[in-house]
Length: 160
Image (cartoon, helix red, strand yellow):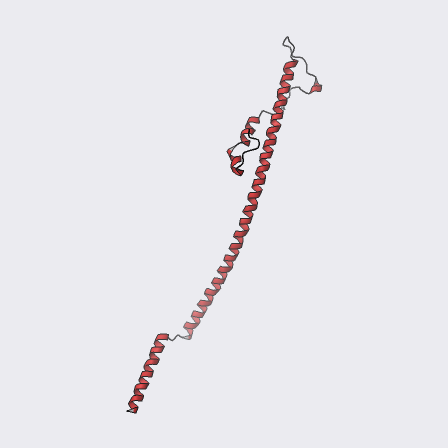
């Protein structure tokens, strides 16, 4: 009976071994090596993508800083442009005032009989074809234009 028990034991052990091998699975060296190569490739690709992601993050930060600098530069240049336009408006207002004075001086110099009295060259009021055209209203409109207001959100200092 002992022999029978020994045979049963061996059969049970052999069956258990087969079950263990079937459950855990045996892989060939080729399959294992292929899986190792595949895993290494995935790790390499992951490292490359992480490096690329870090590079792109740095590029985004650099571009954001550049945008901030350009916006500040744009605000400064817009302010300079508004100031220059305001200066042109003030200059044209002065030119207009001087032209009015010249017209008044010429009108006062007209003789009562309607003949124009000569205007002395010392006063420098001789008419000239080089006098600037009257663009004051056009520049005032430009200085108060919606485009200028939209750049900074502040109304033009030259606007009435």
